[in-house]
Image (cartoon, rainbow, N blue to C red):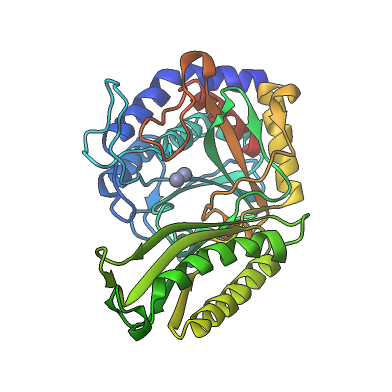
Length: 386
Ligand SMILES: [Zn+2]
Ligand SMILES: [Zn+2]
């Protein structure tokens, strides 16, 4: 059955490649997925599916089977990134400065292919299917909360989604139980003092030494406040102050990101960071402000969902090519919100190919996928419904 499914999906390779390349050439930024949405809606309607648009440019289409019970939702994200593509390929992005460098074109092609495959075998569906094309994954607060609020999960029993991963070779699939991606938060710190002439520091309240101390102290949050068996990342990614050699500036700004997997760790870091900013500011006679912006929550896969994905994938690509306990990822994904409402799992679809030089990570200007991953994604998605 599974081999037959993969063979059927591979029969769709030309369709899948065409879909992926068409979408690749017309990338659109988060909340602006107008033509992308129109294209996908058109492809779905060609299959005789009724398409609705619940939120923004997002799309929902159901595939029902005469013998199917319950409903599973399968999700693809739709948006591209503000990156100028550096790949020299015939289907290069036609929009300068915008490109599908996270591979959401691949995810949409997989879901369109899954729709095509399943629409042709409705009588074999074990579960009715809901296709979710979700906009704005790259832009917090994400498209998932809007889609959910507008009923995307109504009548749904389980929900699944995938992300391509060039770090995994094509033909491999990975998932895990529990936390899979990080809660990805942003912080901005402003230290305000009193500027003046660089030769008369005693008349100023210099924010620069305080900013430097704070950069060092923030590193101790992970090394001294997070237990060795817990995980967190804190990176200061921007330090900004001053204009020239003879002026002490009025203020200094820091910016960065915090990645965590468990809410108590996240809450502890926020609290300790607040304390540090205020203490360092006070010690230097400055005003300190912390703006902490919570990003996506961590994706927490349900055990039952992760097992189902691992089983389905094992039937398609063989047990040896499936990692059911894959390492946690430090990036964030708004798929987290679907799994807070319904059981299911997120999984990673190998899209790299070292021999062909397809190794660049997502969000790089030379990111690409091995399109042989498309039918594999289709077969695993389809298997979840059969
Ligand atoms: Zn991305
Ligand atoms: Zn992505």
